Amino acid sequence: MISVNAAFDSGNIVVNRIAGPTDIELTIRKDAHSDFYQWFHFRLSGAKGQPCTIRIVHLAGSAYPGGWPNYNAAVSSDRQHWHRAPASYDAGSANGTLTISLTPESDSVWLAYFAPYAMERHHDLVARIGAAPGVSTRILGHSLDGRPIDCVELGDGPLHAWLYARQHPGESMAEWWAEGALERLVDPADPVARMLRQKVTFHIVPNMNPDGSARGHLRTNAAGVNLNREWVSPTPERSPEVLCVLAAMQASGVDFALDVHGDESIPQVFIAGFEGIPSMTNRQGALLADYKARLARLTPDFQTRIGYPPSGPGKANLTMSTNAVAERFGCLAMTLEMPFKDNDDLPDPVHGWSPERSKALGRDCLAALAEVVDDLR
Image (cartoon, rainbow, N blue to C red; front, top):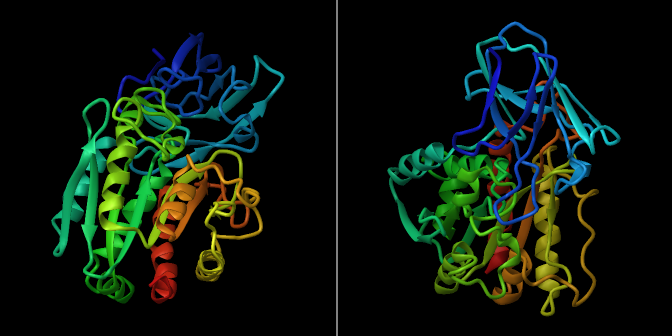
């Protein structure tokens, strides 16, 4: 018997109808206390060897309808290795329909908007990296559901770098990126890591929104709050996650900040800066341009042609972390965006943008930091 289930960590789907393998109709549940929806993650069971047609409907009202055209779903039979199942989007069918086609090779397969980063893997990451020489871990605070906001700290340098991921929990590629960056930083044979740890003290928050991650949200925490609009005046009632990270930043100071995200619609990797903050300086602007140019030279997965248009002078949204941190600390702060689709500049038809490429980008971002670190003083 064919069944669909999402009652697990980061699961999200609603079953409308299963009338056979070629007639499976689903919808995506909204984030709690919010109208955001786009993340899905579910298990399809009992369809081994049968060609299946899965339709996810009512997507015209999703957070980013532009994310569905040219998108292929992530699928795995072992929850370790993910590839892409072909999909097509019809905006005129059932208020927007994504049709996924696959023939499962096993009794159960998992499908997701992007390869998930489970909370158990998060705890394993904190434990594994925290056991490395010279690494400490601390809990900055707790989420509304009582989950710890973990911070991994390492390095002995006078500069303070903050790397933080998954303000938007459905952007799981961000924690894959953090895993790649952390693995490089604790590698005793890596010369880039050794140099950076001499010059920089790192504060790394792999998951800023554990409640949304566990609940299967796209964009919000347990209260339905978009954390990346809370950086002017976070509160314990709405956004304790931002409140505790910002307090720790204030205690340490910030010389470099990278807020790691995923973009639903744009099939490229890019960086959004802080143009438009009231106190924007020529030095900050030069550091931003230099970092992006060096990252583009280091990896063909990154480019500077396509991205968000910069804000005009004095028009930056200071509720967003990159703008708020750059304004408050006078530092180089950036938002890194990776695609949910593929990277059209260097496509991979089997995997699309993937956990492995996210991890590799984390390593490359550190290499770019190594090239500009002396200019951050």
